[in-house]
Structure formats: structure tokens, C-alpha cells
Length: 113
Length: 114
Image (cartoon, rainbow over all chains, first blue to last red; front, top):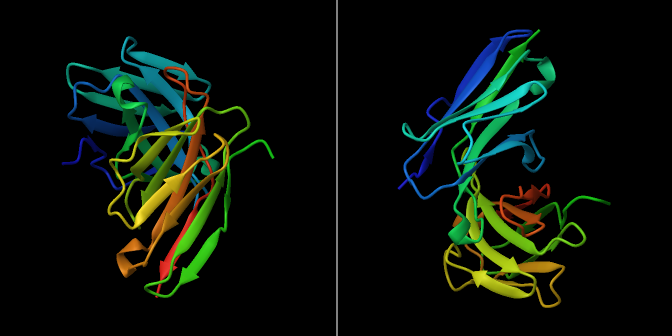
């Protein structure tokens, strides 16, 4: 039972353009959502998060949007840079579970110069 | 260092051997988590500590897996009688423990069982 899904295994964009990574979830009890970025042979690095009481959170070039009715969130990166090339994981948690994270399968983003 | 530290970075063991993986969380972080990541997949939850108390071990795949955090700081994940399907990257994460605080991950231990 995959409760968090990232349906695009890969995404390729041109430097300077917008990257949009998508994530869907099925468990309506999730109330906190995060995006992590992962380079090869390193652990996931926290990027940005959003609580279920909000529908948007912005941090520099990164914006996360949450649509609770659709159980969908997305990460926008503007403008995209070659250094953004990495695997991006969407994760979700519910407070009642001690904040354990449920991850999607990841999306490989490639930003071409 | 300021981050989560895991050791060893790589571990190769023969099937049937026992292994121990270590995690040093960020100083002062109350919550500590272990995850298992198979190739091409997202991390999957194994177990969770709040200080020294193991509050959730529902993700441990079998009774061959055991984790401890005796003094509420360093944690060890032990796998007994290893099998080939145990080959994965084992990630440790810590967080301050307050609501809606992100977890910060170490670089993981890549375990290969021959």
C-alpha cells in the first residue's frame, strides 16, 4: 500500500526554467509534508516543508503547494540551476505516529545547462 | 560535526553474520529514527526513539533486527544472522522532537550481504 506516490521517476528541464515536481498521497491523516533532496552516496537533505493548515510555503527559489482536497502537493523550483540536479523525495507524516515519515519513490531531476 | 553521523559508511558481511550500525544524532535532538532504503526506492521506516525509549518498532522486518539507544543519544541498529535481502542503505535521522520539525538525515550505511 503506497501511501505517498511520485508518479514521475524523472524530469528534465532547461537551466533558468521552472521545475515542477508532483506528489500524491492517500492517507487523509497526514498533516505535515516535506521535500528532501538527495545526491548520490549522501543522505536526504531537508529542503522545505508545509503544514496541513497552509496551502503554500515559500523559501527562496523553492515553493511547496498543498491541495488537501486533491491530496496533492507540488514543489516548484524557479529558476532551476544545474546544481539542483538530484533525486527529490516527497514525505508525509501524521502527528499521532511520532512523526515517522512515509516517503514517495523519488523523482530524478536533471537541469541541463 | 553538527550533523547526524553514521558509521561505518560501508559494510560488507557474509550471510549469517551479525552486524552493528551506529548513529550519532545531532546534539540535543530528542527524536531518533532508523530507515531502510532499497535501491531505487524511498526510505522506509524501521523504528523510532524518543530519548532512550523505543516508542515504535513496527517497521522492523523481523526479530533479527534490534535497535537500542541506552543513554538517549547514540543509537545502534543490530542485524543478526544477516540475509541477502538485508542488503540496503540504512539511514538514521534525528529531530528536536517538537511538532512539525523536520528530520535531519545522516549519509547512511550501505550494507552488502554476500
